[in-house]
Length: 247
Figure 1 (cartoon, helix red, strand yellow):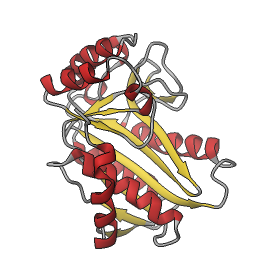
Figure 2 (cartoon, rainbow, N blue to C red; figure 1 turned 30 degrees about the horizontal axis):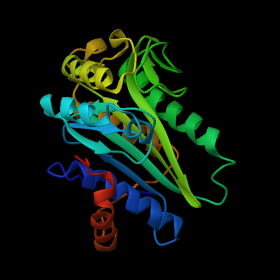
Figure 3 (cartoon, rainbow, N blue to C red; figure 1 turned 45 degrees about the vertical axis):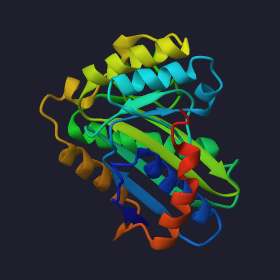
């Protein structure tokens, strides 16, 4: 499995578009299984469901007031916020039948992420937290009360993307931003469910979390470090407008 660490912090929509391009190229058989692990720019990633809501424009403005660039993400339901104190973990894999393996990919991906956090000393649990933002059955939480990882999927014919944000620090500021964003979207949630790893592991570093995630993946996949190739980047630039904030 190729491991990509490239990111584009000055262009958050391009980071989303790179994953979109990788998904398309893996589906076409042009690339093999790929993992991405990178630090994102300060971002509020809106889902397709958010685009349809009356408060979408107001929500984007609210995100920018908190210095989080709004983008339209490739996978997931409702808005999620993250910044340079987070990690984005993704796997793009060839899939002969994307529908048949949907739940297994969610299950295995969430288990890998939870296992990595367990190794760091977190009581990591998989399952939806009542009242959480961007609710999902495969959320990874601290003790079932504090959302630390959101997991989503996007599948096309021939390939699937599993994507997750891992919040390492900055829980307070991201929670404040989400309060305003969700108010603009007219979506209810319980802010007490939002946090970050350093709320339960004070002093935890991005580097330690990176190592735990890489170790967890390397247990059953050989990782080969690579970079985003020119053809993928060219396609990503073509796809970037689809993920940029429309306002």
